Image (tube, rainbow, N blue to C red; front, side):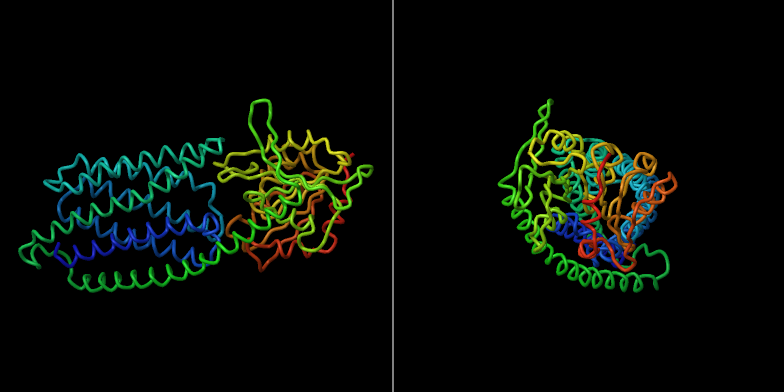
Length: 462
């Protein structure tokens, strides 16, 4: 090892650290919407390629210094990390390996635990920074592993939110651990008496690695700038959605709270039909939001877009980290919604014409609602969602009109395709509209569908 290779190690570790910190900052600012941004896939790929390249250089360092246990466990960790990154990348572009995410994460975390233990207990001579990195790495990995398990299996919204904050904190801590490796290599550089001492390997690799480091820096800056610019428009969009949600709250005369027998509560709004006549019967449309009170269907039905439809509109509040079922690792509020809508005593609600619809998180919830409580609803419009095909036999007689974008990277189009196929196989006749050239944001196309609301309001449960 010579100064050039030590310098390259420091550069790659520095880039990886900067990537990790910047990624956490952007994610905190943008939220889950960051995964939908066009630049994010390239950002994720380049950042992890750089991190893996730095890890390979680190393996070379271990091998050169004859730290064999650390080298072997490091190889396993790099392989596990590469597999985890590959699964995440495929899920970003197509969602095709979602069922493999947790196993890949578990293998990666286990490999890191073994690797950090080897750093602590192997003969590293007087490499105190490496031992400290091992101790800190082990603690952080164990905490993140426990938080990931808890987040995947907990049903409590507050607990999930807290655990997700811990996981994000673990990401920052991991970046700080890189600083310990950097301190170790800076210390070793100062100990070198001769820049060319103990050189192994072929020297032509050094300029090649140097060029790759320059390319990595340029690409990270270019893609990072593009992602930051693209993400900068998200707050405006989020503010707009929040404003629209507040309009819904005002139309409802404020929000309400339902409390069940266990003391669990659900906030919701109920918007009455325009020109409401207590002597008439109106359908009830349950609009499941993807966050807060942000429900596109409710905005349309309530007349925010200029059109009005005579119906009661029920919108349950979706806290951060919660959902409506159908998404693993997300606390579900479905049972509270069932009780709340069953207990509504507003004159004029036609219980034989209760419908449910939602986009994205709400799309998953729509499938979940009709599969678990088909007795409550007369029809459904799930948009960009997915469900359990094993439950398709329960909704063969349910009027369904599903929508999805073929290029959806956030929610795989297979979610809708599999449900529609399973229902047809079970003897049902659902409607399905798929937009070949669209991704996740398809509401503008859905709302333009001729006769959509007329079809929905024509459905009636026997």
